[in-house]
Image (cartoon, rainbow, N blue to C red; front, side):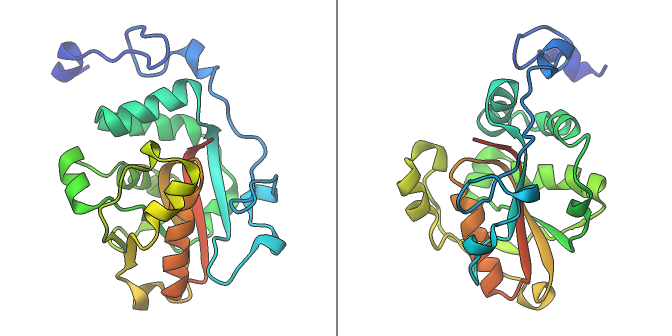
Length: 222
């Protein structure tokens, strides 16, 4: 235990008991996803791969989500994003990706969903990059942190309705790594996906840049 833990002791995100962010009892309440969905139509799909009938030239090829966005996981992600508890990412990734399908290691790069410079300065960190760093160790994949840039300062997606989210994120990203990414297979990393609008927009930009395969990976979906 360090001095910071003495001054600000960790509490379970769900029940508040002192000691750590996830107590043993509340870990059992995490709802892992046992049936992945197609990121386009949201119907069940093998490993989260986009259905052949849902595929388009500039569309996403699949999405893997570890847990449902509720209970302890939802509270933990809110602490990470909105209360700036950056060290919450480590136990989240450790718990949610203790096991993962082997095909996730068969990619060239992890690409974090970028924040606009203004929002990253306000928050002090990009949670998607922190998650990417932790996943990079687990999956043994390199991170390409500057492949995507957020060029439009958008409203927070959580504040918008479903249809508004797709419009809000449209044109928000730009790819800076055309030569390095051409013909590659990449995973776009984000914390949570609800409408999948952010991942779909990132995939479109990356496919236009010449990326061959684009998947998304998120801690939670729902």
